[in-house]
Length: 155
Ligand SMILES: [Zn+2]
Image 1: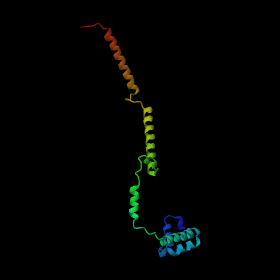
Image 2: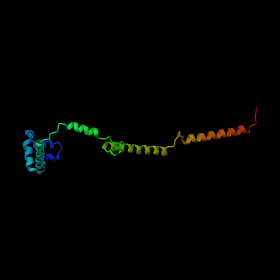
Image 3: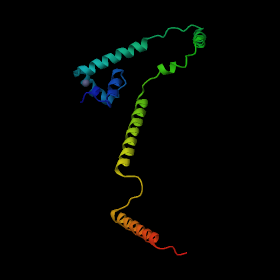
Image 4: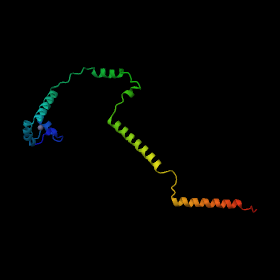
């Protein structure tokens, strides 16, 4: 038998054994293990002592005006100042996750913005043949303009 205290799925059996609620099918096997395993024996003994102490504990009697005094103290408590919120700030796992996600989004957004801007220039794409045709067209227009300006005016 594996040690029940070392496995999450069987530690409940040890707790049930300690308080005498373990099902009979498992009882003899666990009893033999506890007799040979010091960790399980110490755990069982400690759990029994705590359980017994809690069973024997008597809560002190509450005075008849206990509720009234508690409510009075709550009412007399001055309201906390607005800046108290800043000092009561607690760092929680949810807050840490939110900050991490926002930070990652900022990094990713910054990286994609800058890499997209440097890799591809803004504006339409023009390949080499289109550029050559455009240059030839501009040359033709310039030649036509020169011919037009050198021709005599014919009104
Ligand atoms: Zn054990």
